[in-house]
Image 1 (cartoon, helix red, strand yellow):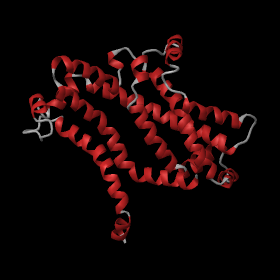
Image 2 (spheres, rainbow, N blue to C red):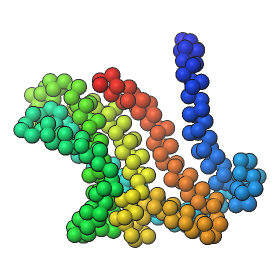
Image 3 (cartoon, helix red, strand yellow):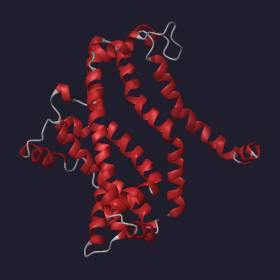
Image 4 (tube, rainbow, N blue to C red):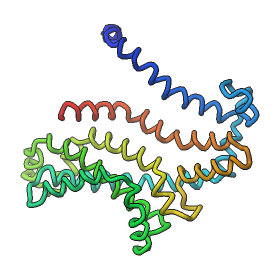
Amino acid sequence: MLLSRLLRGWPYQILLLPYLFAVVFPMIWLGYSSLKTNLELFTSAWALPQAPRWDNYVRAWSKAGISQYFLNSVLVTGFSLVFTLLLGAMIAYALARFSFPGSQLLYSLFVAGMFIPSFIGIIPLFFLMKDLGLLNTRQGLIAVYIATNLPFTIFVLHGFFRTLPSELADAAEVDGCSPIGAFFKVILPLARSGLVVVAIFDFMTIWNEYLYALVLISDAKLRTLPVGLANLYVLSRYNADWTEMLAGLVILMIPTLIVYIFFQNQFREGVTLGAQKG
């Protein structure tokens, strides 16, 4: 059965081979190039390292300050993701199940927020955060990430919640659950596939975000990993330590790969389910 399925899909797999090579090979090259010396990197760019230089990662982690940048990214991404999913799920469920004056307009405004480029509002946002005393703080950056990722989260989860029978929540309330209790005990578990899909997209967006972190954070101790690596790139041009920068790029890439590897089944299930519901 598996062999027949593979044979039926071989034309599509052949067409995808160039794309697979274009995506996978750069990551493989980055991985083994980060273990070279600078001399090997420039004299034999495509060859494997003669002897793995794990001290490149040690230098990047300690000397280049990647450890602090990594910790900042973990804190900012973690809190932003939790509150984005929580608020997004609650708002999406309220807009999907309950009809009240202005509900459709409110949903349209959230969807419209997906089409606003981030760089358009960066200047007024800077002064707003300054007036609120949140400039150059993790809390301010977290608040911005929550606000900017809510539209996409609400848009996706709204479609999932609309497909769930309203009788499920009604039955839970009849059994003694409050509306909030029914939401957390009944509705959220049923929307797990949608939550996983949104969580993966939001994680990758927040983890790799550069513009807001660059503009709103000036303290070197509070910089996130993308901004820290950009500064490391500038320094690498002067001290000629490119393998240290490559090691930092691998450190940036690893969490995204881990998230996808562990949740790829749920991701495919959620995307397929969303396509079928659509």
